[in-house]
Length: 173
Image (cartoon, rainbow, N blue to C red; front, side, top):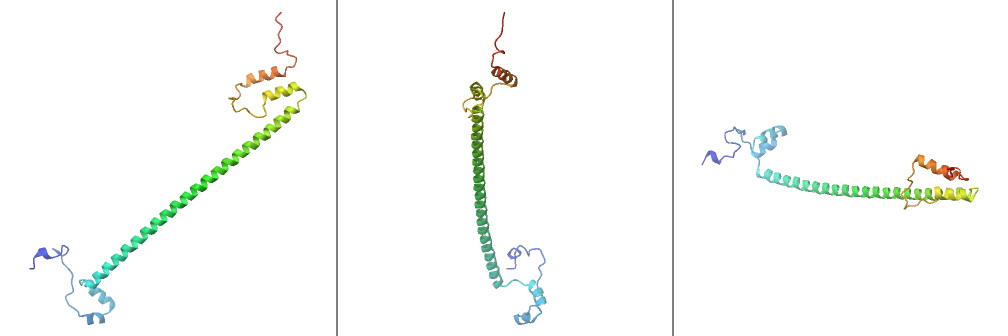
């Protein structure tokens, strides 16, 4: 009947506040709102309020679901923006590479024209052939490059500039 185990866990061994004077609904409605709220603070909630609490919990849960959906959509939009900015970056990088390639080709063609002009302006055919051998108008892609250092280069240039062959012709007598 009035067993201690039948009581809720919160009220076991603890003092529970409650109103000593029970008021009717009419008296309660006539009270000042602040006094009414103080009085109702120590009353058990009516069944209507528990239903209202359930409804408010449902609304809160629905609101959380809506917020989670919105956050997922926002994350999706952020992901799309990131992909878009990445694509824009890739396009800009490709355009920059293309501009560099065009500039390189323009430089190479201008250089080739200048070298051809220099070769054609040489006073003698021998000097023109030497210049063409030393500075080709279009660099050969298969050749590994210049294998001569500065000293060797200067020796080769002196030999090439010697028209009478005084550098390489020697008298051994």
